[in-house]
Amino acid sequence: MQATTATHTPVMVEEVLQWLNVRPEGTYVDATAGLGGHTAAIARRLTTGWVVANDCDAESLEIARRNTLLWAERIRFRRGWFSTLAEGLTQLGLRQVDGLLADLGASYAQLTGERGFSIMTEGPLDMRFDRSSELTAADLVNTLSQPDLARLISQQGEEPERRSAAIARAIVRARPIRSTAQLARVIEAVAPRTGRLHPATRTFMALRRVVNREDQELEALLAAAPKLVAPGGRVVVISFMSLEDRKVKRAFQQWERAGQAVRLLKHVLRPQPEEVRRNPAARSARLRAVEIART
Image (cartoon, rainbow, N blue to C red):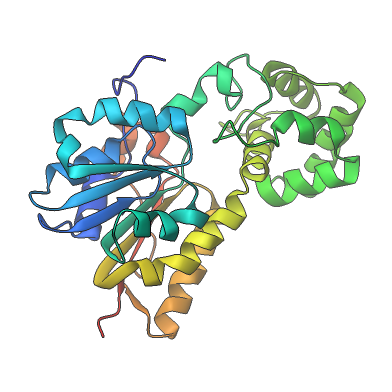
């Protein structure tokens, strides 16, 4: 796969740098390095400090290495899930860091057809961030019962229940389903387009979230972050689904009530209209930030 950032633009970069409060001598974690866009932006501000570029997707991480060669001495790469981040930082000699960023969107590399994430490109029903994992989207689509499929689409994709039921029924009738294009056609036939979203968007999102245990991994990150970030350090999270944003919002509120952190933004921060015009992928981004309480 060719390394390029030409068509990949990290979202809300200036806002991330502002609210992460990057210091030249600080240590930081980009918990979702993707293709390295945010990692590079942080590294450019460092002198004696460094940033850990973490991702569970080996292919994206390899591209990130190539895309950030100019700042290689300021970056440590680490492959792993959120749930093993504390262990990974310990192995790198870090007990705490000065800031942690998590951008919960998919990376550009994952949207190629061969990965099975894209509705618009023919590919296998895969959707694994880590291709060494066993469970694939094809396993879910072709083995779950109709009620379980409907529940998955409704709860993890935030699709209305009646629509989820119709989609699940159509999927079961069309089995076996082997490709992204086939699944998209099956869904499109029973779920009319509403607004800008392709009818299969929420189903694909739901499958991706379950394949990669995204709920559990985000909960693990939010449980660990107050201990991983030093007093006075910042945690910044960008989410793209209301389901994820609610989890982040509740966690930050709980930290504040427990005296663990202070919310820096009382309300979610959205990208500027100019950024959305330049990069439509940013339109659903929501940024929240907290500062870990000083002891």
